[in-house]
Length: 165
Image (tube, rainbow, N blue to C red; front, top):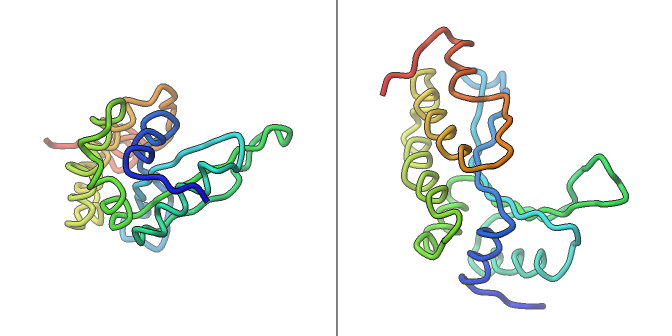
């Protein structure tokens, strides 16, 4: 098995990764929605990179997922390595935060603005969730395909509330 270090993990995320927050409808929460920060690297092949990223996580005690991604074209399957959750992301990104080139601002927003608010629990109330969504919108503004259903504007309209900075 190929062993990789911080530089290769940073490069993989910087070049082939996405950093985001998945918003899910969840009737078991007070406000009806949950948010899960995550980092994903997608490849066309389940190759040595996926295995090396998995081994890196195992070495550091970081929870991860590696598997195939359901795509519209079964002739071109895609494979993804995903790290989600606050503790896992802090273990993964914290030590390499300063090494990012392309996604440095995204990592800074996730670690500096979104995760601390999630740790404080502000997202359990509608006004706090709007605050988190403000930063999620900032984070996703860096993505070229940011056609998302769940945005700050969506929740402001849904709850008939305005985000107050």
